[in-house]
Length: 83
Image 1 (cartoon, rainbow, N blue to C red):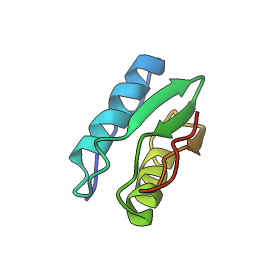
Image 2 (cartoon, rainbow, N blue to C red; image 1 turned 180 degrees about the vertical axis):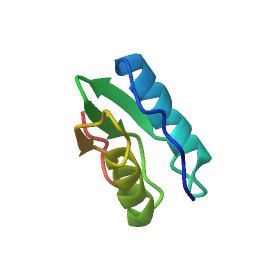
Image 3 (tube, rainbow, N blue to C red; image 1 turned 30 degrees about the vertical axis):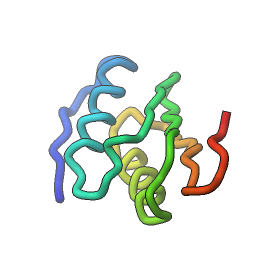
Image 4 (tube, rainbow, N blue to C red; image 1 turned 60 degrees about the vertical axis):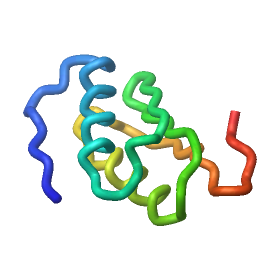
């Protein structure tokens, strides 16, 4: 699935919206992911249904213009959530 991105991402709110839209449009259940943005770093949280979902969420975020780094704090089923 290919997503077209605008050439200029203006601010953190715009990047966060793009991150959420990207997750929502993906066929894996990554749209339940909690997203926090801070100066280009995307922090992902909540529970991941599988390692594939966790890896996919990280890869999708890394491909978004304006996201400089991704900190994946998603927990697998049975694991405590990161704080």
